Image: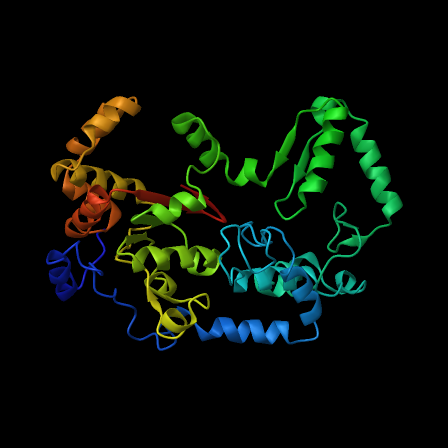
Length: 389
């Protein structure tokens, strides 16, 4: 079913001027939601910083914040040659609230040894992600035995016995998994041990969580990772931000989006949920112009029905073709099989597209014109913490 659009809002969409700074009025939020803030970010970020960095955990936080290392939250590089608040480009104030949040979680006190004796598996399953995170750190090994309702604490000696018995199996029956939250050094040692045993069954979070992206990128671009560097992003004058709430999950990207808007670039947000931080965001990196008044982020905010992004992108392709913005010479010189993609877009009717994705043809046409007339564009598809450029 097509998403209903306010008639006055639709009239404004029909009169959109893609050459203006904001081609779309601020999208309509739920008018009954009194808790919706004016902007995302802003002073609450400073309050969060103060609460944690001036608390008893503050000294440990600052010690880690000043490291020349990658962020525990998003893996964006920090430190460079200048210290923990300067990035590789020499830009200042490059630590966000998510970084403090991640470090704070890592340095929490250990969970008491009696906790898991009192809490059953059923009770633990009722905890929210935040409640589970705030329990503290695991400082001892545990096991869930068959038929048991509680985790049992075990000794390290028993851990070694279990591991030794497992590793005695034939190499093809042994596999390893390393989390993205573990260190690179630990992951390196794990894979080295597995290979020494004759096993190639190595898995990590990139294999499981991001396999579709890596396979698709390999087939299309002969690379398993993003094609867009920080330097590339700075040159973009159009960014399509699809399926990611960067204002919360990747706040440092917001600084780059603000700078793109400041130089007259356009940001197209594609997200079923209306996130205030993707409409207007206050960044502490720009205390005068952005922190309190907030900076415009989205030039156009599209809200497709969840799971219908393919239909929306087909619609954008169709409109680019109909508006005469197709870069056919580029397609002929650098791509294969593009004719089938173009034919599919041409043959798919607008009614099917708009009914499937819930976005009006007028909005799709504006998005297509912005993309088609931008000299340097970048598409960012969010799947968790990792962007695909």
